[in-house]
Image 1 (spheres, helix red, strand yellow):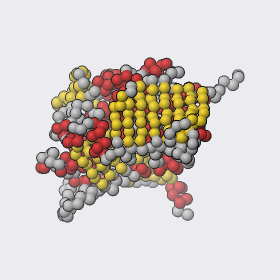
Image 2 (cartoon, helix red, strand yellow; image 1 turned 135 degrees about the vertical axis):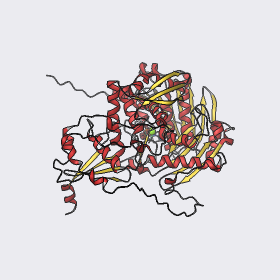
Image 3 (cartoon, rainbow, N blue to C red; image 1 turned 90 degrees about the vertical axis):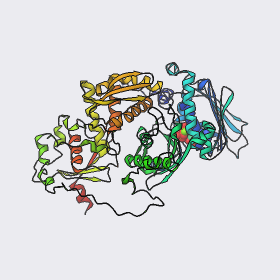
Length: 619
Ligand code: ADP
Ligand code: MG
């Protein structure tokens, strides 16, 4: 038979890739602003016409490009920002993929003018749908101007997918706010349809916030400053009485990058508990600084997600610092300020007195109990033995549920054991008298296996366990829900409501029961059995954020996305300490899964090291 495989022509490949980078005009704004910042600009101008559908132009006074670089910048994977893969771990620029300009040029008319300081003349390049229409020397000031016209001119489907000007402009402004807030040391000016809507001079952080959100903002800001070993926080939160019905004044920046994190957002809400009305949202503008090695920035250009090594601790520190600030500024009644005791270790409060450590003695502790239940490893050879009933609530410490007792009864879920995995463990219990587990840095579970040892990532492993559980419920459509004593009312914006409505049926299959779904409000009367009431808002917000970040063209499977999103929200976090029983139960549950080796997002859940590997190291 004749060969049938062909290489896609560049312009087609570029158009496909562009779909990933450019979803809407706001994505272009983000990429161009970030390039200007990377170029060391001190003043950046953004000009927009018709919500970016007709024109998006960014003019900077940065370092500009040479003639050759100007031409090269439109090639895919052309970047001046990294050279080797190692550079990825010490990123100090916004961009590094070298894809933005190539993608934008594939789906729009682009006019680039750029000049380096020492040059007499600059370069003008005009490109339409990846093909160069004109290149010449030109008179232009130092820096770069990139004008993007007629976005999606050659992909009518994408153009039709764009929302109204109001919606698209909202996205652009959001993007502009995020960039401008992260860089008060750069001046920004923004025009829409010929009129100037923002003029932000170089200023301190407080002034930048006030310049963006208006003069009244000043009186409502309360500073938050905290430095611990793992996390530095600086910025402002809003006084509770100014909490708003919308969430558009909520900003987290991690190492100068805007991120979305429903989990950390929950930490703030927890700090405000009892201070703001149900359905209103406190403002916050917080810069978090962490060691870049402890985060995993999702390198997908349009995503704003980030993974922390130790989310659980960050949650506690953020909640406590915000609470502390609110308390210090006499916003909360002083007595209400209950600090979380287990937080004191990473803290250096100036006036912290010395106190005698308290020793808690567990009088019911029976040292022989463990031994009696020890010969468990043998259980694996008989297939999956039902693990002991585990108090799964304890996996959610730190996120106290508001008085409702919930059952996290995953031990009830019956999985079919996968025989291949069982073989990992010892067949002969005499060789391996007890399957010992050990938790390392509240992150990994180490367990002995037949050939040596296995190291399991607790967060990813638990995600896999929960994910398969949810998928099962979603497909068989017979999830069990627990009735809430008091209905939970959660407010959402109209876009969020639209989105949740699309997922309503699937949500019901996981065990949610809604009594009404209207007027920006969802009334929840039942939740899946394994979901603590206090986590419901995190789950729904995480879900909204996950759906928003899905590339619109990709295969959207609501069921899978829901299962992934919920397992992400509910999985045991890194940083969470687990009892022996919980550790063992996690190991057992993971190996009862159909696909234990990867997390729902295809990340490795465990690795093994054989005794041979150790022997080699000990020569
Ligand atoms: P990335 O930012 O990931 O490197 P881009 O496609 O956004 O990729 O840009 C490609 C290259 O073009 C950059 O690495 C940079 O060298 C150059 N460039 C883009 N925009 C500017 C600008 N405003 N000023 C100077 N150089 C720029
Ligand atoms: Mg870039």
